[in-house]
Image (cartoon, rainbow, N blue to C red):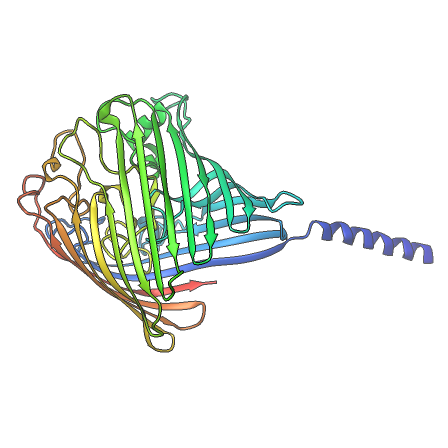
Length: 467
């Protein structure tokens, strides 16, 4: 009997050891947002009144993001991130996800990847569907690529101050035998190289990315099939040529705190896409600069400037705006160019390729606080277009869109007052007020559609739970 008890004890011990060898620790994090939004003339047009314009509307939106880290040890983990409410239509109360008689409540996979280090080294790898943001010191994210992509990215520390990030991503693949494009050359593949450098009082990260879009992929992108027009922007042809595209981007982010309490942030980006003929070419620039003074306890004043190249008046030489993939978090101000506190308090919900071709200058008084847990940010901004006015309404070229694209004859003034209060460390109550004074030229846009120039307003309030 004692032998049986001893054998059972040993067996339980061995099984327990085997189980512990495969045990993981799960860590959950997330961001839950609910927003109550009153909006008026988001397209800067009094006469339009469609659901997408949200003119004079009251809507409620919610987006729930949850991430689960399955941690085996400090060198190995798997990550699964989910999202309820990927688009404005999926976020809106009473919409497809939240109808009392026909609720969908779909959960989307936002990220799914394995993160591990090579044994005995500090070389880190991420393989799978993951978030990639090219270097950006200002604006909240890269204007070129800031999205979830499927790929492999490796970080190699060189010295304490310098590392190298190299990666491959498949941005798009539409391999469908029923498609008119056939089943070949349907992918968009990219390779990236980033060199982050951290010195005493300085940080910068030069980068280079190259992508090739196969001819069939370009055709699908041009047709907007399967949501591709949202996924890959700036690669479609302005002419009738649907051959493949070669695209590259380069630039650097820069941050300086050496002269504390003065902080300087800047970015320089360039991108170029080439096709068979000049009409298919596309190239352009982004430059931004912001200077903060962090010496006050009660607020941080900031001056900022941003510029992107715009179209000239010749349609035969291609586009002079920078090709972009997804710049969903980039923004200056908190209304016209994205940057809102919650999720839908901007005209498009994200920075759009149609907005490229502008310069903007502004002042922010950030994190004004005289009462504990209560903060305000005040913003005033002026923006004007760098796109030639003569391309408005050009036949066969969907170059400009009223309410999004600024020509060299158009401008806007934006004023925002955003307030936040910490109910708990993890729960924030927000209250945002925004106003856009419409300075679009009536003569430039007179023949494009029926419209009545109008200013835009918003009142947004809601809660943000981050854990």
